[in-house]
Length: 459
Image (cartoon, rainbow, N blue to C red; front, top):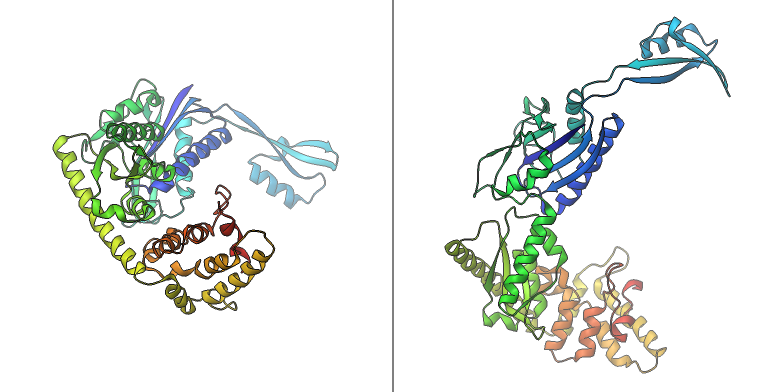
Protein backbone atom coordinates (compact mmCIF):
# COMPACT_ATOMS: atom_id res chain seq x y z
CA UNK A 1 0.00 0.00 0.00
CA UNK A 2 1.16 3.51 -0.78
CA UNK A 3 0.20 7.15 -0.39
CA UNK A 4 -1.14 9.12 -3.35
CA UNK A 5 -0.61 12.87 -3.19
CA UNK A 6 -1.96 15.31 -5.80
CA UNK A 7 -1.47 19.07 -5.95
CA UNK A 8 -2.72 21.59 -8.51
CA UNK A 9 -0.85 24.91 -8.40
CA UNK A 10 -1.68 28.03 -10.40
CA UNK A 11 -2.93 31.60 -10.26
CA UNK A 12 -5.31 32.86 -7.55
CA UNK A 13 -8.55 30.88 -7.25
CA UNK A 14 -11.53 33.09 -6.29
CA UNK A 15 -12.11 32.73 -2.56
CA UNK A 16 -15.75 31.68 -2.88
CA UNK A 17 -14.81 28.71 -5.10
CA UNK A 18 -12.07 27.14 -3.01
CA UNK A 19 -14.02 25.09 -0.46
CA UNK A 20 -16.26 23.51 -3.07
CA UNK A 21 -13.28 22.79 -5.32
CA UNK A 22 -11.43 21.08 -2.46
CA UNK A 23 -14.47 18.94 -1.71
CA UNK A 24 -14.97 18.02 -5.36
CA UNK A 25 -11.32 17.03 -5.84
CA UNK A 26 -11.49 14.72 -2.82
CA UNK A 27 -14.73 13.07 -3.95
CA UNK A 28 -13.75 12.77 -7.62
CA UNK A 29 -10.38 11.18 -6.85
CA UNK A 30 -11.89 8.83 -4.27
CA UNK A 31 -14.47 7.64 -6.81
CA UNK A 32 -11.86 7.18 -9.53
CA UNK A 33 -9.66 5.09 -7.22
CA UNK A 34 -12.65 2.98 -6.27
CA UNK A 35 -13.73 2.51 -9.90
CA UNK A 36 -10.24 1.27 -10.78
CA UNK A 37 -10.10 -0.96 -7.70
CA UNK A 38 -7.07 0.86 -6.31
CA UNK A 39 -8.29 1.26 -2.74
CA UNK A 40 -7.53 4.58 -1.12
CA UNK A 41 -8.55 6.29 2.11
CA UNK A 42 -8.69 10.08 2.29
CA UNK A 43 -6.04 11.43 4.66
CA UNK A 44 -6.46 15.17 4.22
CA UNK A 45 -7.27 17.85 1.67
CA UNK A 46 -6.12 21.44 1.26
CA UNK A 47 -7.28 24.57 -0.54
CA UNK A 48 -5.96 28.10 -0.76
CA UNK A 49 -5.54 31.02 -3.12
CA UNK A 50 -3.07 29.25 -5.39
CA UNK A 51 -3.37 25.55 -4.73
CA UNK A 52 -5.64 22.55 -4.31
CA UNK A 53 -4.19 19.37 -2.84
CA UNK A 54 -5.35 16.01 -1.54
CA UNK A 55 -3.67 12.99 0.05
CA UNK A 56 -4.94 9.38 0.00
CA UNK A 57 -3.49 6.48 1.96
CA UNK A 58 -3.75 2.71 1.43
CA UNK A 59 -3.56 2.98 -2.35
CA UNK A 60 -2.40 -0.16 -4.11
CA UNK A 61 0.59 0.17 -6.39
CA UNK A 62 -0.85 -2.34 -8.87
CA UNK A 63 -4.31 -3.48 -9.84
CA UNK A 64 -5.33 -7.06 -9.20
CA UNK A 65 -6.06 -9.21 -12.23
CA UNK A 66 -9.73 -8.99 -13.14
CA UNK A 67 -12.23 -11.30 -14.81
CA UNK A 68 -15.10 -9.41 -16.37
CA UNK A 69 -18.29 -11.20 -17.29
CA UNK A 70 -20.00 -9.85 -20.39
CA UNK A 71 -23.36 -11.07 -21.69
CA UNK A 72 -23.74 -11.35 -25.46
CA UNK A 73 -26.56 -12.11 -27.87
CA UNK A 74 -29.15 -14.81 -27.42
CA UNK A 75 -28.21 -18.33 -28.50
CA UNK A 76 -29.39 -18.77 -32.08
CA UNK A 77 -28.87 -15.11 -32.93
CA UNK A 78 -27.60 -14.25 -36.46
CA UNK A 79 -23.89 -14.88 -37.03
CA UNK A 80 -23.38 -11.18 -37.69
CA UNK A 81 -24.52 -10.32 -34.14
CA UNK A 82 -22.34 -13.02 -32.61
CA UNK A 83 -19.28 -11.95 -34.60
CA UNK A 84 -19.79 -8.36 -33.51
CA UNK A 85 -19.90 -9.47 -29.88
CA UNK A 86 -16.74 -11.56 -30.29
CA UNK A 87 -14.95 -8.57 -31.83
CA UNK A 88 -15.97 -6.20 -29.02
CA UNK A 89 -14.95 -8.71 -26.36
CA UNK A 90 -11.68 -9.63 -28.08
CA UNK A 91 -12.25 -13.40 -27.92
CA UNK A 92 -12.90 -16.28 -30.33
CA UNK A 93 -16.07 -18.35 -30.70
CA UNK A 94 -14.63 -21.34 -28.84
CA UNK A 95 -14.18 -19.11 -25.76
CA UNK A 96 -17.90 -18.36 -25.53
CA UNK A 97 -19.93 -19.88 -22.71
CA UNK A 98 -23.63 -20.72 -23.02
CA UNK A 99 -25.85 -20.16 -20.01
CA UNK A 100 -29.52 -20.43 -19.23
CA UNK A 101 -31.12 -17.32 -17.78
CA UNK A 102 -34.66 -16.37 -16.84
CA UNK A 103 -34.97 -14.85 -20.32
CA UNK A 104 -33.52 -17.83 -22.16
CA UNK A 105 -30.09 -19.06 -23.27
CA UNK A 106 -27.40 -16.44 -23.91
CA UNK A 107 -23.75 -16.38 -24.88
CA UNK A 108 -21.33 -15.10 -22.22
CA UNK A 109 -17.73 -14.01 -22.48
CA UNK A 110 -15.31 -14.20 -19.56
CA UNK A 111 -12.70 -11.54 -20.24
CA UNK A 112 -9.51 -11.79 -18.20
CA UNK A 113 -7.66 -8.52 -17.74
CA UNK A 114 -4.23 -8.40 -16.12
CA UNK A 115 -3.83 -5.68 -13.51
CA UNK A 116 -2.08 -2.45 -14.49
CA UNK A 117 0.43 -0.47 -12.50
CA UNK A 118 -1.26 2.34 -10.57
CA UNK A 119 1.32 4.80 -11.91
CA UNK A 120 0.18 3.93 -15.45
CA UNK A 121 -3.49 4.47 -14.61
CA UNK A 122 -3.16 7.77 -12.74
CA UNK A 123 -2.47 10.12 -15.70
CA UNK A 124 -5.82 9.31 -17.31
CA UNK A 125 -7.54 9.62 -13.94
CA UNK A 126 -6.00 13.02 -13.14
CA UNK A 127 -6.48 14.41 -16.64
CA UNK A 128 -10.15 13.38 -16.63
CA UNK A 129 -10.68 15.12 -13.28
CA UNK A 130 -9.07 18.29 -14.67
CA UNK A 131 -11.15 18.21 -17.86
CA UNK A 132 -14.43 17.64 -16.00
CA UNK A 133 -13.83 19.95 -13.03
CA UNK A 134 -17.10 21.85 -12.38
CA UNK A 135 -15.83 25.39 -11.91
CA UNK A 136 -18.59 28.00 -11.74
CA UNK A 137 -16.46 30.10 -14.09
CA UNK A 138 -13.34 29.09 -15.97
CA UNK A 139 -11.00 30.52 -18.58
CA UNK A 140 -8.52 29.63 -21.29
CA UNK A 141 -5.10 31.24 -21.46
CA UNK A 142 -2.21 31.56 -23.91
CA UNK A 143 -2.97 29.13 -26.77
CA UNK A 144 -4.70 26.53 -24.62
CA UNK A 145 -8.04 24.98 -25.55
CA UNK A 146 -8.73 23.42 -22.15
CA UNK A 147 -10.06 25.66 -19.39
CA UNK A 148 -9.45 26.03 -15.68
CA UNK A 149 -10.59 28.57 -13.12
CA UNK A 150 -7.31 30.48 -13.52
CA UNK A 151 -4.09 29.63 -15.40
CA UNK A 152 -2.77 26.30 -14.12
CA UNK A 153 1.02 26.11 -13.81
CA UNK A 154 1.88 22.83 -12.10
CA UNK A 155 0.41 19.37 -11.58
CA UNK A 156 2.19 17.38 -8.90
CA UNK A 157 1.29 13.70 -8.61
CA UNK A 158 3.32 11.51 -6.26
CA UNK A 159 2.79 7.84 -5.44
CA UNK A 160 4.62 6.44 -2.44
CA UNK A 161 6.57 9.70 -2.26
CA UNK A 162 7.87 9.46 -5.83
CA UNK A 163 6.68 11.54 -8.80
CA UNK A 164 4.38 9.90 -11.33
CA UNK A 165 5.18 10.49 -14.99
CA UNK A 166 2.35 12.09 -16.87
CA UNK A 167 1.34 14.94 -19.14
CA UNK A 168 -1.82 17.03 -19.30
CA UNK A 169 -2.52 18.21 -22.85
CA UNK A 170 -4.21 21.63 -22.69
CA UNK A 171 -4.51 21.98 -26.47
CA UNK A 172 -2.88 24.53 -28.74
CA UNK A 173 0.49 22.80 -28.30
CA UNK A 174 0.33 23.73 -24.63
CA UNK A 175 0.49 21.30 -21.73
CA UNK A 176 1.89 20.55 -18.30
CA UNK A 177 4.18 17.68 -17.42
CA UNK A 178 3.58 16.16 -14.01
CA UNK A 179 6.19 17.00 -11.43
CA UNK A 180 6.96 17.18 -7.73
CA UNK A 181 7.75 20.88 -7.22
CA UNK A 182 5.36 23.07 -5.28
CA UNK A 183 5.96 26.78 -4.69
CA UNK A 184 6.23 29.08 -1.69
CA UNK A 185 4.65 32.44 -0.85
CA UNK A 186 4.65 34.78 -3.85
CA UNK A 187 6.62 37.51 -2.01
CA UNK A 188 8.04 36.02 1.18
CA UNK A 189 9.45 32.79 -0.27
CA UNK A 190 9.23 32.78 -4.09
CA UNK A 191 11.02 29.48 -4.65
CA UNK A 192 10.38 25.87 -5.56
CA UNK A 193 9.55 23.32 -2.87
CA UNK A 194 10.38 19.67 -3.52
CA UNK A 195 7.63 17.30 -2.39
CA UNK A 196 9.65 14.17 -3.18
CA UNK A 197 9.88 12.26 0.09
CA UNK A 198 10.56 8.87 1.59
CA UNK A 199 7.92 9.60 4.22
CA UNK A 200 4.20 10.28 3.88
CA UNK A 201 3.79 13.67 2.21
CA UNK A 202 0.37 14.30 3.76
CA UNK A 203 1.94 14.28 7.23
CA UNK A 204 4.64 16.80 6.36
CA UNK A 205 2.93 18.98 3.73
CA UNK A 206 1.67 21.61 6.19
CA UNK A 207 5.03 21.92 7.94
CA UNK A 208 6.95 21.97 4.66
CA UNK A 209 4.89 24.79 3.21
CA UNK A 210 4.83 26.70 6.52
CA UNK A 211 8.62 27.00 6.22
CA UNK A 212 7.91 28.91 3.01
CA UNK A 213 5.21 31.16 4.54
CA UNK A 214 2.18 29.21 3.30
CA UNK A 215 -0.55 27.93 5.63
CA UNK A 216 -1.86 25.32 3.24
CA UNK A 217 -4.78 23.91 5.23
CA UNK A 218 -7.91 26.02 5.11
CA UNK A 219 -9.02 25.16 8.64
CA UNK A 220 -5.62 26.02 10.12
CA UNK A 221 -5.53 29.31 8.25
CA UNK A 222 -9.02 30.26 9.38
CA UNK A 223 -8.31 29.36 13.01
CA UNK A 224 -5.18 31.52 12.90
CA UNK A 225 -7.14 34.49 11.53
CA UNK A 226 -9.72 34.13 14.32
CA UNK A 227 -6.99 33.90 16.94
CA UNK A 228 -5.20 36.99 15.66
CA UNK A 229 -8.24 39.24 15.29
CA UNK A 230 -9.61 38.22 18.69
CA UNK A 231 -6.26 38.88 20.34
CA UNK A 232 -5.81 42.24 18.61
CA UNK A 233 -9.36 43.34 19.40
CA UNK A 234 -9.20 42.37 23.07
CA UNK A 235 -5.88 44.15 23.49
CA UNK A 236 -7.69 47.39 22.60
CA UNK A 237 -10.80 46.63 24.64
CA UNK A 238 -12.92 45.83 21.57
CA UNK A 239 -14.87 42.89 20.24
CA UNK A 240 -15.16 41.57 16.68
CA UNK A 241 -18.46 41.96 14.87
CA UNK A 242 -19.13 38.35 13.90
CA UNK A 243 -19.22 37.85 10.15
CA UNK A 244 -18.84 34.24 9.02
CA UNK A 245 -19.09 35.13 5.35
CA UNK A 246 -16.26 37.65 5.58
CA UNK A 247 -14.14 35.21 7.58
CA UNK A 248 -14.57 32.54 4.91
CA UNK A 249 -13.71 35.01 2.15
CA UNK A 250 -10.61 36.40 3.83
CA UNK A 251 -9.42 32.84 4.56
CA UNK A 252 -9.44 32.28 0.82
CA UNK A 253 -7.55 35.47 0.02
CA UNK A 254 -4.36 34.98 2.01
CA UNK A 255 -1.71 32.29 2.41
CA UNK A 256 0.09 33.76 5.42
CA UNK A 257 -2.43 35.83 7.43
CA UNK A 258 -1.33 38.69 9.62
CA UNK A 259 -3.85 40.98 11.36
CA UNK A 260 -3.31 44.75 11.41
CA UNK A 261 -5.56 47.25 13.20
CA UNK A 262 -6.45 50.64 11.75
CA UNK A 263 -8.45 53.61 12.95
CA UNK A 264 -11.61 55.26 11.62
CA UNK A 265 -11.69 59.05 11.78
CA UNK A 266 -14.21 60.45 14.27
CA UNK A 267 -15.91 62.51 11.56
CA UNK A 268 -17.22 59.31 9.96
CA UNK A 269 -18.63 57.78 13.13
CA UNK A 270 -21.84 59.80 12.72
CA UNK A 271 -22.71 57.72 9.68
CA UNK A 272 -25.25 54.90 10.23
CA UNK A 273 -23.47 51.80 11.46
CA UNK A 274 -24.78 49.74 8.56
CA UNK A 275 -23.01 52.02 6.09
CA UNK A 276 -19.76 51.86 8.05
CA UNK A 277 -19.82 48.06 8.37
CA UNK A 278 -20.83 47.42 4.76
CA UNK A 279 -18.20 49.82 3.41
CA UNK A 280 -15.52 48.02 5.40
CA UNK A 281 -16.83 44.55 4.62
CA UNK A 282 -17.81 44.72 0.94
CA UNK A 283 -15.17 47.04 -0.43
CA UNK A 284 -12.16 46.47 1.80
CA UNK A 285 -12.68 43.09 3.55
CA UNK A 286 -12.13 44.69 6.98
CA UNK A 287 -13.50 43.31 10.22
CA UNK A 288 -15.62 45.80 12.16
CA UNK A 289 -15.30 46.20 15.94
CA UNK A 290 -17.55 47.17 18.83
CA UNK A 291 -16.68 48.64 22.21
CA UNK A 292 -17.72 47.31 25.62
CA UNK A 293 -21.15 48.93 25.31
CA UNK A 294 -21.83 47.25 21.96
CA UNK A 295 -21.43 50.49 20.03
CA UNK A 296 -19.47 50.43 16.78
CA UNK A 297 -15.84 51.24 17.56
CA UNK A 298 -13.72 53.73 15.55
CA UNK A 299 -11.36 50.97 14.44
CA UNK A 300 -11.11 48.02 12.06
CA UNK A 301 -8.87 45.00 11.48
CA UNK A 302 -7.51 44.02 8.08
CA UNK A 303 -5.75 40.75 7.24
CA UNK A 304 -2.58 41.19 5.24
CA UNK A 305 -0.87 38.44 3.27
CA UNK A 306 2.55 39.23 4.71
CA UNK A 307 4.62 38.28 7.73
CA UNK A 308 4.70 40.53 10.79
CA UNK A 309 7.07 43.47 10.40
CA UNK A 310 6.77 46.71 12.35
CA UNK A 311 7.63 49.08 9.52
CA UNK A 312 5.60 47.17 6.97
CA UNK A 313 2.62 46.90 9.33
CA UNK A 314 2.68 50.67 9.75
CA UNK A 315 2.64 51.15 5.98
CA UNK A 316 -0.25 48.68 5.66
CA UNK A 317 -2.18 50.48 8.39
CA UNK A 318 -1.69 53.91 6.83
CA UNK A 319 -2.55 52.66 3.36
CA UNK A 320 -5.74 50.94 4.48
CA UNK A 321 -6.85 53.96 6.52
CA UNK A 322 -6.32 56.17 3.47
CA UNK A 323 -8.41 53.90 1.24
CA UNK A 324 -11.18 53.63 3.86
CA UNK A 325 -11.20 57.40 4.29
CA UNK A 326 -11.91 57.80 0.58
CA UNK A 327 -14.64 55.15 0.64
CA UNK A 328 -16.34 56.65 3.67
CA UNK A 329 -16.12 60.14 2.19
CA UNK A 330 -18.10 58.89 -0.79
CA UNK A 331 -20.59 57.15 1.51
CA UNK A 332 -21.02 60.30 3.60
CA UNK A 333 -21.62 62.39 0.48
CA UNK A 334 -24.37 59.99 -0.64
CA UNK A 335 -25.87 59.90 2.85
CA UNK A 336 -25.96 63.72 3.06
CA UNK A 337 -27.49 63.95 -0.41
CA UNK A 338 -30.17 61.39 0.45
CA UNK A 339 -31.04 63.12 3.74
CA UNK A 340 -31.48 66.46 1.96
CA UNK A 341 -34.63 65.09 0.32
CA UNK A 342 -37.65 63.77 2.21
CA UNK A 343 -38.66 60.14 1.90
CA UNK A 344 -41.91 61.30 0.30
CA UNK A 345 -39.92 63.05 -2.41
CA UNK A 346 -37.83 59.93 -2.93
CA UNK A 347 -41.01 57.86 -3.11
CA UNK A 348 -42.43 60.04 -5.88
CA UNK A 349 -39.43 59.12 -8.06
CA UNK A 350 -40.55 55.49 -8.01
CA UNK A 351 -42.95 56.38 -10.80
CA UNK A 352 -39.99 56.20 -13.17
CA UNK A 353 -38.87 52.76 -12.01
CA UNK A 354 -40.48 49.76 -13.72
CA UNK A 355 -41.61 46.96 -11.42
CA UNK A 356 -42.66 44.11 -13.69
CA UNK A 357 -44.09 43.81 -17.18
CA UNK A 358 -47.83 44.25 -16.88
CA UNK A 359 -47.70 45.29 -13.21
CA UNK A 360 -46.73 48.93 -13.71
CA UNK A 361 -44.07 50.90 -11.87
CA UNK A 362 -42.69 50.46 -8.37
CA UNK A 363 -44.92 53.38 -7.32
CA UNK A 364 -47.93 51.39 -8.56
CA UNK A 365 -46.74 48.54 -6.41
CA UNK A 366 -46.43 50.86 -3.41
CA UNK A 367 -50.03 52.00 -3.95
CA UNK A 368 -51.13 48.36 -3.77
CA UNK A 369 -49.07 47.80 -0.62
CA UNK A 370 -50.71 50.82 1.03
CA UNK A 371 -54.23 49.59 0.24
CA UNK A 372 -53.58 46.03 1.45
CA UNK A 373 -51.78 47.26 4.59
CA UNK A 374 -54.75 49.48 5.46
CA UNK A 375 -57.13 46.53 5.12
CA UNK A 376 -54.90 44.40 7.33
CA UNK A 377 -54.69 47.16 9.95
CA UNK A 378 -58.48 47.23 10.27
CA UNK A 379 -58.44 43.57 11.31
CA UNK A 380 -55.72 43.90 13.96
CA UNK A 381 -56.45 45.52 17.33
CA UNK A 382 -54.14 48.26 18.67
CA UNK A 383 -52.34 48.70 15.36
CA UNK A 384 -52.31 52.40 14.33
CA UNK A 385 -53.48 52.32 10.74
CA UNK A 386 -52.26 55.85 9.98
CA UNK A 387 -48.66 55.06 10.92
CA UNK A 388 -48.80 51.73 9.11
CA UNK A 389 -50.00 53.55 5.99
CA UNK A 390 -47.08 55.98 6.24
CA UNK A 391 -44.62 53.09 6.59
CA UNK A 392 -46.20 51.33 3.61
CA UNK A 393 -46.05 54.50 1.51
CA UNK A 394 -42.34 54.99 2.24
CA UNK A 395 -41.06 51.40 2.42
CA UNK A 396 -39.64 51.40 -1.13
CA UNK A 397 -38.50 55.03 -1.20
CA UNK A 398 -34.83 54.21 -0.58
CA UNK A 399 -34.59 52.27 -3.86
CA UNK A 400 -33.91 55.56 -5.67
CA UNK A 401 -31.34 56.85 -3.17
CA UNK A 402 -27.67 57.13 -3.96
CA UNK A 403 -26.75 55.09 -0.89
CA UNK A 404 -28.76 52.05 -1.97
CA UNK A 405 -27.45 52.51 -5.50
CA UNK A 406 -23.95 52.07 -4.05
CA UNK A 407 -24.93 49.48 -1.44
CA UNK A 408 -27.89 47.42 -2.76
CA UNK A 409 -27.70 45.22 0.35
CA UNK A 410 -29.04 48.15 2.39
CA UNK A 411 -32.42 48.44 0.66
CA UNK A 412 -35.08 48.81 3.31
CA UNK A 413 -32.44 49.25 6.00
CA UNK A 414 -31.38 52.57 4.50
CA UNK A 415 -35.00 53.70 4.35
CA UNK A 416 -35.28 53.05 8.07
CA UNK A 417 -32.25 55.23 8.79
CA UNK A 418 -33.60 58.01 6.59
CA UNK A 419 -37.00 57.83 8.32
CA UNK A 420 -35.33 58.15 11.72
CA UNK A 421 -33.17 61.07 10.54
CA UNK A 422 -36.33 62.75 9.22
CA UNK A 423 -37.99 62.41 12.59
CA UNK A 424 -40.76 60.02 11.52
CA UNK A 425 -40.39 57.95 14.67
CA UNK A 426 -38.84 54.64 15.61
CA UNK A 427 -41.97 52.60 14.81
CA UNK A 428 -42.09 53.70 11.17
CA UNK A 429 -38.32 53.41 10.90
CA UNK A 430 -38.33 49.84 12.21
CA UNK A 431 -41.22 48.81 9.96
CA UNK A 432 -39.36 50.08 6.86
CA UNK A 433 -36.06 48.49 7.95
CA UNK A 434 -37.62 45.08 8.59
CA UNK A 435 -40.23 44.79 5.89
CA UNK A 436 -37.99 42.61 3.66
CA UNK A 437 -37.57 40.04 6.41
CA UNK A 438 -37.23 37.14 6.50
CA UNK A 439 -34.56 36.99 3.78
CA UNK A 440 -34.12 33.24 3.42
CA UNK A 441 -34.77 30.37 5.78
CA UNK A 442 -32.02 31.39 8.18
CA UNK A 443 -33.34 34.90 8.78
CA UNK A 444 -35.67 36.18 11.52
CA UNK A 445 -39.15 37.56 11.02
CA UNK A 446 -39.67 41.30 11.67
CA UNK A 447 -39.57 42.21 15.35
CA UNK A 448 -42.31 44.85 15.06
CA UNK A 449 -45.98 44.21 14.32
CA UNK A 450 -45.85 46.97 11.67
CA UNK A 451 -42.98 45.31 9.86
CA UNK A 452 -44.87 42.01 9.88
CA UNK A 453 -47.96 43.64 8.35
CA UNK A 454 -46.34 45.28 5.31
CA UNK A 455 -47.52 42.93 2.51
CA UNK A 456 -44.27 42.72 0.55
CA UNK A 457 -44.92 39.42 -1.18
CA UNK A 458 -48.50 39.91 -2.32
CA UNK A 459 -48.22 43.23 -4.10
